[in-house]
Image (cartoon, rainbow, N blue to C red; front, side, top):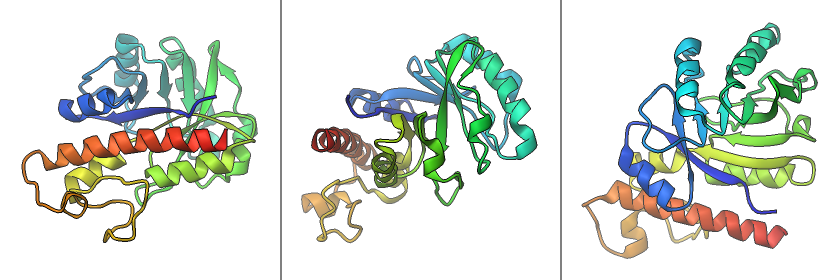
Length: 235
């Protein structure tokens, strides 16, 4: 069994999307924003959900998998499953995002005739799930956001009790754009930020032209290689 499907899920920049797809990533889109490639995955603004606009976009693009309303409160499950039932018309699998501790046993395995995948929101400073990882046992799991190292840690923790089928995120893009850094899985101590060197640290010279795109390109290729290597060692 190979490593999880890696998905680049962001918007507003075609060039980043092209770089990720060229590196072997599947394309994901936050709908109903602009789409640059046929989306494998669809997500929506979980802080400002707009069900009619999202469902219209799902009907148009027909992604393989799609998230629905995050399950954040006990009494919210009927709404979450209602979203899932509607989304199931347009996708192959529905992703439910559980954030209620102890609630996963109440989630059905299939909704609207489609399999359910649990989308585990990796904890970051912007949010995430407090659900213990052991509650995901026996489920297909998608890792939603987070850094490459955080995702790999969760993957290794779940391995043997749950199948991590896919991951997504745009962490590498943020590091490239905000800090001019790329992911180096060797984690060399010679870098000021161990896992995320600047181009000048790695190459010995400054680079100004296309720096964010070059950083992102290297990150995409390195992350893809790191996952493949991890899987071969564990297999």
